[in-house]
Image (cartoon, rainbow, N blue to C red; front, side, top):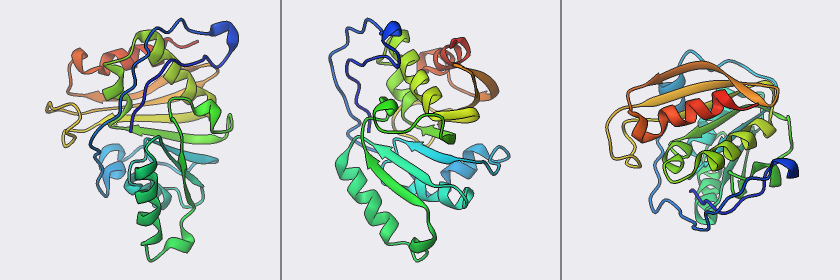
Length: 213
């Protein structure tokens, strides 16, 4: 689900000096029905614009988002082509398939500028992926990822981040969820709720999103 490589900045003048040449991918994936509502109950309001599910895996979360936001088109993005295939099979198996505004796209969701239009998404979700990857990335690289989400979101658009205690990815109990609102080239903190320590990347991501300008 996750691949990290040397990246280009959104703007040439801000090109980061990235030295990381490794790549990595989760050998396993985690998803289950109802995860979005269970995590963000009370914050899921109707929006204008498209919805992004970054790291969509088998599409379970993406399809759930289509029921939460029935008037929006939901874009699921993952860099694992096998999971994209499973996601499309999952979508086609739904009895209400024709009414679901969902599409799946193969691509690196940490380079969103390359595959998605700017300022078109009202909300973006990154559940159980960026937090895990942030432990292996520098602050500069994590800042680059945050700017990718800022690029695709419309002004005032919301970024939903989470890691839940059912995930095998962190191998520690606890949860983390945070919501940020796009404001210009940065983010404003809307809500943070966590039971994970700094070593699990929570504070790091919060600081990076709050410090963008």
